[in-house]
View (cartoon, rainbow, N blue to C red):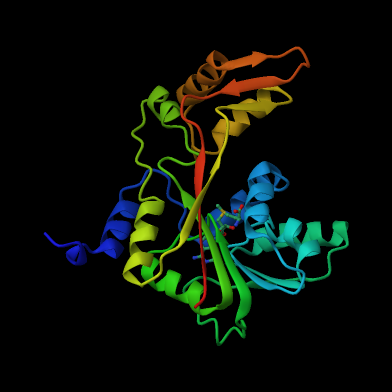
Length: 270
Ligand SMILES: C[S@@+](CC[C@H](N)C(=O)[O-])C[C@H]1O[C@@H](n2cnc3c(N)ncnc32)[C@H](O)[C@@H]1O
């Protein structure tokens, strides 16, 4: 067998078809936008990603699959301007509301999908293109070529390592099968086939996470599971209770077996 014969796009597509957690359409993301924004805006993930970018004051940045502005909000004061693109109108509403309250005026939001014609949408080429945890596409090679074409200087994308934010033990506790789907290694291989040899860095998190209440700790797991039966809800709570303790400051510390890890893949344009 030759490396060249491996169809990485097919591995990606078929891996996605078998994964447990499927969010396909913009209406799925619309529904999740408020809770996602509460969980993700202002997190250490965003701090670390932004530091890795070493942002420059004269950069224009295209943020594809920007969500509620996880990265656009902390980047805004550090760069010249940002075009924040997402196919979910509710995610963009979350972003705009935060820009308004924080007095941010250099972020322009635009509703578009990875598969739209970006030229027809008048999306110009930016200095830097980013796609953080947002390459949720059927045709990964095509999306990677697109994000590469829309950047003049640099590209930064992030992808799951293994199960990423998902907790396989939780699925097991509920008696559900868990298939995380393809991760960053497929992305790397497609880039390699495109002649791109990127840097890979990792964002690791501790296995413990702090919550201000037990209820928040339960919510911190609930997002992984869409609809729960009454029996599953009880199992979820038992799972959380088993791994939860209150520290001397009154914070609730939830400890999972698998730590969360993200890969940040970046490259410079030739
Ligand atoms: C996991 S969130 C990531 C949001 C943000 N970039 C972050 O790192 O927190 C994925 C985002 O990608 C968007 N998204 C998913 N598929 C998309 C597509 N085909 N076109 C445009 N946006 C998409 C979703 O609406 C969602 O806001």
